[in-house]
Amino acid sequence: MAAASAACICAASGTVAVAAQAEVVKADVRGVADRALRAQILQAIGRAAPPTSRIEARRRAREAAETAISVLRSEGYYDYQVDSDIGDGDAPQPFVTVAAGPRSKIRTPVIAWIGDEPDAKTIEAAEKAVTLKAGDPGRAADVVAAEGRIVAAIQRRGYADAVSAPREVIVDHADFTMQPTYKVKAGAQVRFGGIKLASHGRISQRWVQRLTPWKVGEIYRPESVAELERRLTDTGAFSAVTVSLAPKEEAVNGERPVVVSLADRTKGAVELGASYSTSEGAGVNSRWLLYNQLGLADTLTNTLQVAQIDSRAQTELSLPDWVRPLETLKLTAALYRERPVAYEEYGIGVAADLTHRYGKTSFLSFGVSVDGTETNEEEEANFVTESHIRRLALLAAYGAFSLDRSDDPLNPTRGWKIDARLQPTVALGDGSVTYLKSWAQAAGYLPVNALGTVLAARVKVGTIFGGDIPLVPAQDRFYAGGGGSVRGYGYQEVGPRFTDNNPEGGLSLFESSFEIRKRLTNQWGVVAFLDAGSVGLENNPDFTHPKYGAGLGVRYNLGFGPLRFDVGTPLNPDKGDPLLQIYLSIGQSF
Image 1 (cartoon, helix red, strand yellow):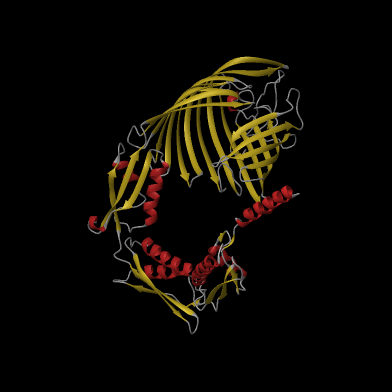
Image 2 (cartoon, one colour):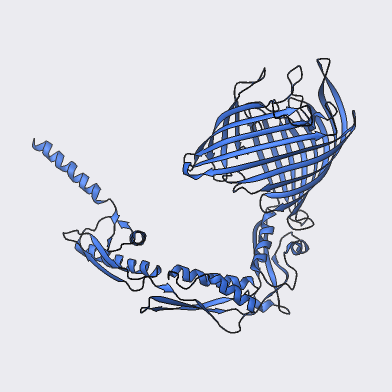
């Protein structure tokens, strides 16, 4: 019995020791009726293990009182009374008793100019930037933030050297008000000079000068300096970019140059990759990239790709900010072989594309291309499908735009986006034809925050005018089915088929998708989806007999976007369609 009792005492002692280490508030707060204010004081006081002596408890109570005073003053309570004390016992609880008193209200703020005043419009802009009104709570953070807004507003009007002196805040304990006075030195108004390259490596100064969003002699705007830095950074040609206004000692005739420092990326890089898709097969690729060889922030990309469907050797020269800022010219030359189920194509082609970007994800593009192709196409006559070789010269132009108002290009949760493309083509050779291919797509995203869910929907329509089947080349027809189209079906396997069950393609397209995206944790989420789509042999899209696919998916957040794993099944399959299709990719399906 004695041994058992000793064991029980040890166990009990161990429990007490563990409990003693549990954190509690360093000091309780009493006397504060405002729950939000009390919670703010408690959070500032913090938590720790309980005190082990009365001396430690008194020290904590004094520290808690000082913290409570800091919080009260920051919230505009200047007529406070704070007392600290401790409870009874050898290890008592510290506490503070707070009488917050009335909260002081702001009187109309005043701006006192040091030296010469700026122009009248700048004074007006500074006064508007204060935003504090008479009667507002006298929070310290609000008073300090107003000072920063004043200086920023003055600088935006061209006074680059504007600074603030220590402000003066007078608290009147008789009427519980506080009067902030901001002391500001505006300095002289600054005008832009030219570009001064502090370090530039292989880049051309003339090219950098062309990117400036101002003209020499214009009034300084800090946002213009930030815009130049963004434009240089977005080219991807530099490992570091710094843009700043030169010191006033370097001004010439009242104009100050802008100092640009650029560090070149390494001259080149080699990238290797591999891919696999249940519908599109396996592939390997390599890219050899050369940066800034022409001194124009250019990128030369040499690609070699061997894949089941798309194999190619391609060279692309990208010239950012070609004629105007935010415009990118791309020149491409390629040898390629495409071998989907519907056709087999060998070709050589050159293309030029000019893209003007609006924001980070919206753009307007124009381009031209010339291709020489040899295609093994199928054609059906009298219920018999035959293959034949078709040689064509294809001359095409296109215009396209993308307007993206969603919150994330890889994982949108709200907003919308619209994409469209128009491409006239002249095909010369075996069966010459002229046709116009066009399509448009819209997608929307609606968050249901209470459920941690996003409702997403997409619709796409397309049509080809001026040609018919079989004159429109197989590689330019519409096809549907696969991970970015109608899930549950294989790649290009939605639409009309030849007697051998291979896809024929069509002159019109309709696709739609609806998803319910549910976030489970910060890393994991699930998706339920329903897709529909049809390909028609006529110009008008067929909305009456679509193929349906449905399924479930898992999303894993990689930080920059989700890893997507979807399993789909056809709801109204044709003969030969598999029961399931699996899709693995990065980013949401739309």
